[in-house]
Image 1 (tube, rainbow over the protein chains, first blue to last red):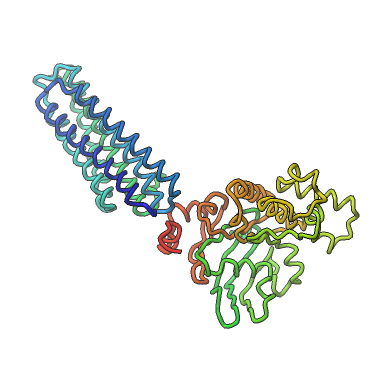
Image 2: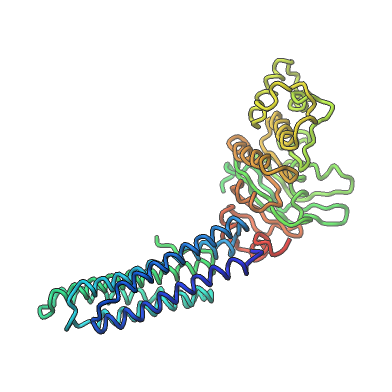
Length: 210
Length: 254
């Protein structure tokens, strides 16, 4: 693309800002989950609104670059992938907001959240690494992130199984753990989507699911 | 690709201008009723390539061709007369070239007059039919006796396409047919090219890679007389296999 500086750099700058919002919110949600802290919902909502604006900004920049330069090949892929990465980050932010909703909804005092807390930590790490792979076009790192999804899925099912069998936990704790685990599992899926897009960006080939 | 689905089978095609080799071992197969775009930087052999397909290259003294071009299985250099080849393989040039001393209607049927003994009524009907096919009829139906040169550039180019179509070609070669036209005329020609493939096989040279992406099913990228990549247009423009193709279509050279 002739004017790569004008568009690709701007697009990636917006995506970096989105990642910062997600990482900061993720850290706060982690602390809130581990300490059963309430009162984060409004801040998380504001973050998700902010990230939505930035996603729209990325969309505008991508559409602008398509109109102006009609890019092809790796230039075209960089635009289409940026659109998807921005969307995935927006969804991840929304999932973090959903966790604060769950924390707000239930009485979480005395709940054992160690499993979901560890799950959240891993999912956050997958998000950060998926973006690192995207920015550096590191296919190998993207592939590592995708491999980690199986472990997240397995541990999500274990949380459900543990909660289902639990006789000592109160209802609120079971719901907190079950709902949070499901939300976190979806977060990790979106980190994988970003990694899949990175692989496509680098190779030009999409992963076959058949 | 089975033999039935091959309109044009080009095997190890070489071409020279005197001692200078312009095409080097080009092999590709073109399916019937498709649009194939030929792209590449100036001097890469695109025009030479299509001029070999209708045996125009050999018209210049000193030019040579080697290799095989099969049209529906028939070798166009050994099994066919050059006039037969040119009748089956029509050509539209970069600059519209209507015959200035002929009326619009006569321009359309000029080729037919040379080879067919059709009567006046039949020729009028053929002129109308082919002007309709290129979307020009409504614009010129009251001016059929006017000179072809009186039309705008875009109309002249469509007139030339009508003239080529009147010969009922099986293949139409187009050498940058829109490079001298405004955006509206270009859009009309592009629509026409897409419509033509229901009946005909089209091979079009273009310097406009966006145009190649818009109108073609297959794309061939040439560089320094060699065929670098030939694939479905979507693959070429989304994920080219050759780094040279990638660099060319992203505007990094050429």
